[in-house]
Structures are given as structure tokens and as C-alpha cells.
Image (cartoon, rainbow, N blue to C red):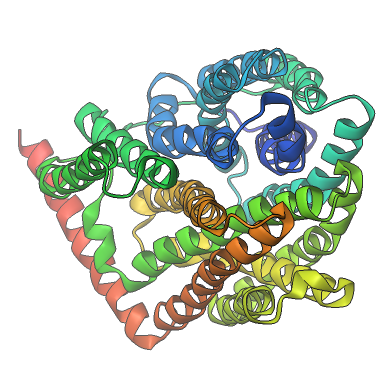
Length: 487
């Protein structure tokens, strides 16, 4: 790819950030609209779970193959296709006549979204070739996630209260079209010199594992945990997992490189990403339903209540990035784990939602924790990896984030639905508050997992395992290249 001027590189970065903004904003905006949508469609808790999880599930399943496809046939081409599909999916969501159609159209959105974020990151890393400039560009990219977290609840509340929930999908139309036109004009085409070969069997196994597991968790409260339907889906998930473990090591270029998990930092980053984003998905799901269905707030005021959490995420995310750059990931991970655990304990043990000061404190603590956790995840995942493998390691970390959010909404919603079904008191508010207590303990456990695995995966022993894994992978890669040359 030819060297671009500074102005052109900044424009490419802005275009890539536009795609990240609409993909990230979509979930935080949608959470505020859940109670309104539930009332309009007369949906159950599981129905609301599917509006979130249909998106994150498909996104998690397609992130890695979308990136490798873009490396093979052209990054700009795939990026443009992603913008078209995501914008079309948004229009369809805004026109959905019922819950079933909305869930189906959310999967269309997710197919487009899977072509945007990983491909945009590839475009950025190939546009900004100088290491320091690339680091700053990736820092700006990461800051957009914080902006979407901060703006999402407020923008969603304003749109839902003034226009209606369908307007949250209209926002994507002008942004998507503008990004598409600018991409065609200013983003150069690029491909990888040696793209990874497709792994259709591995891809089907991943989809089977995530889809069957999510369905079993979400539908179990209504169908029964031991019903034949749920047991069938649970068995399918187990079979898919066993298939992945047996099949992937046999491939020269697997979809998931299982040998990465010999590195404690990589394994730790995967668990931390799943735990942190499960806590986020569950936190947003519980908080939105509580503020609107129990406290009786409208969407705008519910969004304003979530601003302390979003604001702290916006403030702490860049601070964590600088801290990781200067002192490594350990301190950021420990701060994140302590803050997220403390927030969960306030809700689970001290009923923080009952009083405004304790509620704000719990929201602030969660925002601090989530703000600090995001930056060190990718850093920890790629620590010590050979440069040729760093992109694949980062893709697994990104996929783990989406898996975490999917499972968080599924598990927290299932715990809540089970509790409400058992309670049967005269008051929905009493049912919800009592049923949410175990769910907050699950979120507390996720925060504690961030703390424990953050400590274990960032010490001297963990760095040693990363170094040995990198050496083994480098030697194996060199052997493969030598064999290829000999042929």
C-alpha cells in the first residue's frame, strides 16, 4: 500500500472510528430501550435477552473469519460490504413489526458489524506503519468505545422519549452512508501478503458451540433446566466444544490456535475478557430494567442515572491505556477487579439500588472497573507472542469480549427470570428486587475473576510461560516455512 499523507491517514482513522461508533453505540443505546420494546411487543425477559444476544452471538461467531476474509479478498471491499449490510440491518430493525422479526434483523446487523471492527483495525495497522503513530491511532480507536459508553444511555433516552425506540436504529443510516461514501473515496485497498486459509469446519463448530449454549441458558427458565429440549442443546454445545479441541490442532492454520493457551497471559486475557464483558452485559441489562420497570423512570432519566458509570469509563479508559504503556497491565487489572467486585457487592449484599447515594457510588465503581479493564486485555493477550501471531491473538481477545457479553445477558437474564417465576408475590417490584440479588452475586463473581486472573496472568511466572510459548510457536513457524521452501 502506498505511503499516505498525514491528513489522509487521519481521515482513514476517522472513517474507521465512525464504523466502531455505530457498532458500539448500538448496544448501549438499545439497553435503554428494552423496557419500552418489552411493553410494545408484550415480550418476556428471554425475549429481551434475544434482542441483545442475537447481535453479540453472531458478532462473536464471525469476527475471526471476517478478518481473514478481508486479508484474502481486500480489506476495503469487505469493509464497504460490512457498512452496507449493517446499515440495511438497521433500517430493517427500525421497521420490525414484532419481536421475532427484530431478533432476525439484529442478526443481519451483526453480520455487517463483524465485517467492520476487525477489518477497520487491520486498515489502521496497515495505514499507520510507524510504531508510535500507530499506538496513538489505536488509542484514539479505543477511546471511541468510551465515547459510545458515555453517549449511549443519554442518546438512547432522548430518542426513545422524544421519537420512539425505532429512532435508535435510524441514527445508523446517515453515519453508515457517510462512512461508505468516504471509504470509497479515501481508503486505499490492501491485502495480506499471505492470508490465513479458511477453516469452515472450525467455524461451524464455533457457531454450534455458542449458539447451542446461549439458547440453552436463555430458554431454560421457561422450558425447564432438565427438559429434553434444553438437554439436547446443552449436549450439542458440549459436542461442539469436544470437536473443536480434537479438530483444530490437526490443522496447519486453525481458526483458533489452541497452543496460544499455553501462555498464561493469553489464557488470563481470555478469561478476563469473558468475565468483564459478562459483568457489563449483565449490569446494563439489570440496571435498565430496574430503573424503568421498578423505579418507574422514563428512558431519558434512566439514561441520566447511568451517566456516572459511563463517565467514569470515559475518564478511566485512556488513563488505563497510559498506565499499561508505562507500567504494564498488572495495576490496571487489579484496580479493575477490585472496583467491579466492590460494585457488585454493594448491590448484592447492601441493596445499593434502594438509596440514591449508594446507587451512584456503585455505578461509579463499576465505571472505574470497566474503564480500567479494557486496555490491558489486548495487551495481555499479545504479550510475548511472535509478531506474525499477534493479530490472531488480538482477534481471539476481541471475540472473547463478545462471548462474554452474550453469556452475561444470557446468564443474568436466566437467573432473573427463574427468580421472578419462583417469587409470585403481589408486586412486580418485589419480585424483581428479590430475584436480582443472585444475579448481582454473579456479577460480583465476574469482578472477582478479573481480580484473580489479572493477578495470576501478569506476574513473573506468567511472563515466563508467554516467553516459552512464543519460542515454541516461532520455532514451529520457522520449520513450516523451511518445509515450504524445500518443496
